[in-house]
Image 1 (cartoon, rainbow, N blue to C red):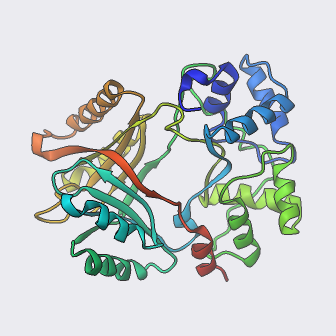
Image 2: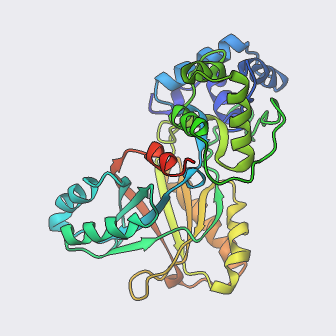
Length: 352
């Protein structure tokens, strides 16, 4: 399934409602279905379960479960830009992608920095080594753009249909938990992270099934996932859509040279725009990269994408006089690699 036209009313209700806030209880599809019925969508727990399973199998979802914040688990990840000469582009991409530490790599529209990739490592000190190796192999300089400040990471993609505002938040259901003041993981927590990193089983009792796989107490699994949510190790629990399958094919990375003294004001303002999925402060590179602020937008058409970018600029204009050279938009033209973060290695390195 590649177009939203193939999604019926229940599909759209599920996707709008549960991109976060799914209950962490023994039988979570019961209260989830009840929440949809309260909003005029007539569905049983069994029907909801089957529909989530179908969406998962058809590729409309990338997974169902907990979206883990890798940064909070351990290790480090950084965004890197580089120039790949046109006549050697494919060869350079192959050299970069051969590094197992490179998790994502995109070709983007820019007159110079046309290759953008993410390096994920268990040991933060390893970033310099990986980039030095890539420079030696490709003969091209890399520009490290680590996240200095995060204003928003909320990649939710809503559709026309029931529950258009999204956000049916049932995360309050389940055990009462208190965050733990501990950065490292226990061996049991490490095993749980690895078990759920690619999603929960789409079954009537997903948390119990994970517990069975681990030989753990189901109540402990629910309590720990809920605590991870409270601590930020888990960003949210719910359905994680494949935004391309929902028609969000226009991926625009807007970049801005925001006056340093205004970033703390501008960041929250731009992050409040519901179509901005990622919003960060990153370093400049003098003479090559003048931008210190990134805001990612997604649209279902070129016109929608352009409109959303104009709204970001309009917000920026409220804070300073944005000149033509103060910003740019880099559209991705090709996915060169997308393997995901190696969570197990990062969790291993941060386990007591």
